Image 1 (tube, helix red, strand yellow):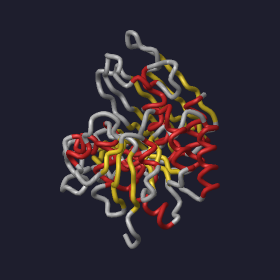
Image 2 (cartoon, helix red, strand yellow):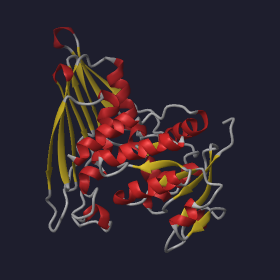
Image 3 (cartoon, one colour):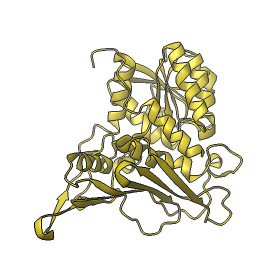
Length: 339
């Protein structure tokens, strides 16, 4: 990194801040983690004693040294906080979903252009080990012309969650579609682009649930390619997260990225073994040869690399590089989520 680190402020130190942001801001040389907002318990200082803990977002936004604000607050607040940060002269990295509507997202990108500031969206699942390997297999052409693709992210969580913004029907951006759907839609769009059409089905199965806790989104692409995105909160048996069928073969892979679990356990992104899936997590590549002879190959995943997203943020802010999660892709995502 030839330029100076980006002085960064974090809007919250909940699960997202603790796991997905702070460990990278403190180990990636492109960043200086200066401050965080903690309205109640002051937890960040126990791990990062040099970091300032502000009581309010206004204090964070008024810190003149801070160049980049990470907006990792509840979904329904992303737009307002990002607008405040941009009006305050800060670049923003916004947790998914970027906003609640495509109109809000357009406003954010327009504001960024007006003030010559970067508006970047945090879609870390592009940097999962499994997704990286799936993308490689697809782009290799070994499966032939693609016919059917399934991406899944499943959980089993019967109780209603404690995060009110995810579970209350009157809160914009609620439910599983905005939560995990933002990941799956981004996975699909990042490989296949904007679909020709789509059909979205949602349901609510947990007792007392006010919001959707199941969805299936069927995306139709040129050449009769069908892509299915599915997630549910009452799926007891984990199914493969990636199933790809083509004219020459199939690829099947469980979601076994280890980065979140490792970070939650206190491992640093710089530690040996970080992001490396355990043995037995390989994807199964089945290819059909002449006379329908079947060959099976087990493909180990590349190392998971959430740090790649932070490297992209650095290059975008310091070198004006194109951020890999593009405005167009986010606009398509929000059009689908809000429909």
